[in-house]
Image (cartoon, rainbow, N blue to C red; front, side, top):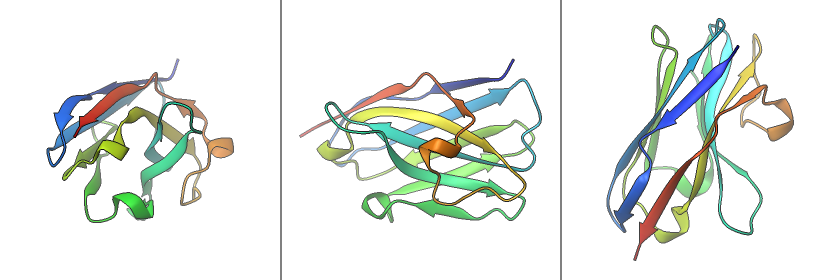
Length: 126
């Protein structure tokens, strides 16, 4: 049974930083896209960032470029999202997502995601 377990969300002031992690288990993830989506209250779930194997390419939505960094530990099957210079508009529930594919699509799209985490709340106060 595949599990994605997220951690690291929380409350932070604007300009602050958070680091989230998502540990995947239950199958092989060697060729896959691992990434993050977020959903703010009253809004649709949107793509944030992703990391693809086998080519190690990363992709970010425009609003987080230069502030967020995604990284991946293939041994631990864990993906990380370092979030710096957080803004109130980054407030959302953040979901880990995995697409299993030899050459997964970037950016990630919801219809291609095979596995979702349960989500972790990030709140940025002004």
